[in-house]
Image (cartoon, rainbow, N blue to C red; front, side, top):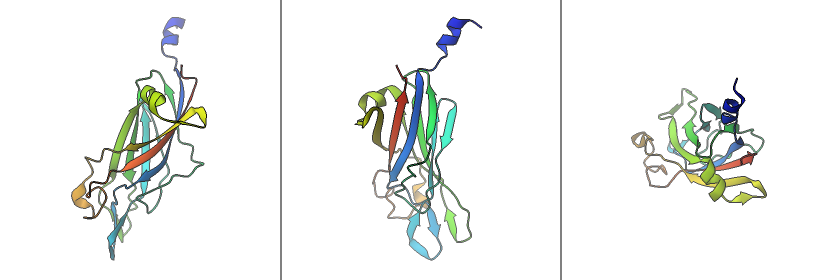
Length: 168
């Protein structure tokens, strides 16, 4: 193997990404005898390049907070313009008295380099956080409760934290 070619494929570093919380997510779970209350069991899918990870599921919430001890995802970064994708879904428990009418709750993506430059620092200079607005244009609104935040024009958001190591 050519050593120069190998250097061209070495990552710039590792990016640790965690989803901390969500706010005003669509309520996609309808419960029998509770027509005025829709909830979700949200989880997030995180992707960068070919690598992917999944958060845990937070039950019965449209404003979830993921556990502080959740590992998050570690991604090898090969160039600064790579994009991290976060997609939010509602976990369908498939119970008899509870039904999830739509699984997709929204998505957002961000450039590694731009977020390292623009997101505010948190404590140490390697950790950054931002609250990002989800693109919910593909959420099936006709299946949501009439008063759902997505139907009322209230944006759904996720708070994301990232920590870099050895990114030049």
